[in-house]
Length: 177
Image 1 (cartoon, rainbow, N blue to C red):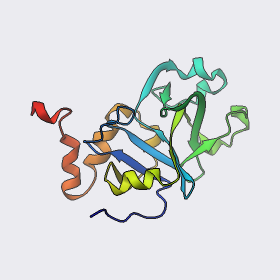
Image 2: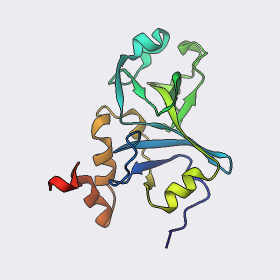
Image 3: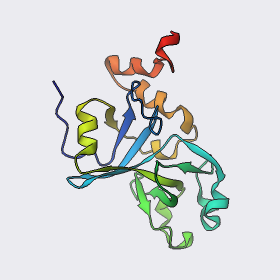
């Protein structure tokens, strides 16, 4: 029987279940920016790319959090860039990258830049949640700006309570175990 989920997971993390077979999302951690009846949108937090942030958006390079790379935000519209800064209370919020960095409030501090995003049509994410393709967990302020993003999947799972934390040690290939 499928579990029930809240109507919106905006502001929370989607952690790919170990069995999630989609190569676009295997072992990813997605920060959800929007989720309503029309669909959902988020960015993958743990896939730094090879292009330096300075090459992608030179004006924003001095504010890029380490590692200062253009992250692979998801498989949708990879030619576009989404920026996250910090709100006054430290939580990640989308930035208007058409603004000059000096016009962004100081509270935004360091930023993270993402090529593309993860997107779901109406009901699509809800179906994936019902079939347990994603684990929904609370985000921490620092998750979106982690200095060690490639270990974020294990870190986020490892800080969960009970048996859910065990998934942090789930082998990359269960058949090789």
